[in-house]
Length: 79
Image 1 (tube, rainbow, N blue to C red):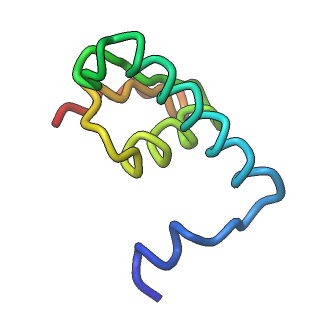
Image 2 (image 1 turned 30 degrees about the horizontal axis):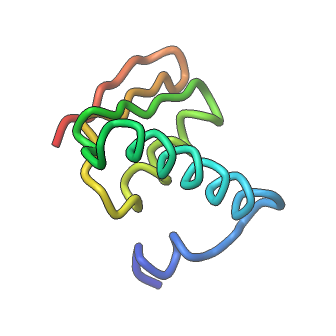
């Protein structure tokens, strides 16, 4: 199994719905930013951080940053 196939799997109940809701929020925020995803930052903490990384990397528009805090270690992912 490659990474693309694994990203399509819902290994826990509710992940698909959460990712769709994050996409809807990102769509709205990108629209409010004049269609420029590079003015939008996505972040999360703990499980939310994992969802933020997964949703942000799969999002079709480039985002300025994905910020997350996993296991008390802070990361900022830049393009």
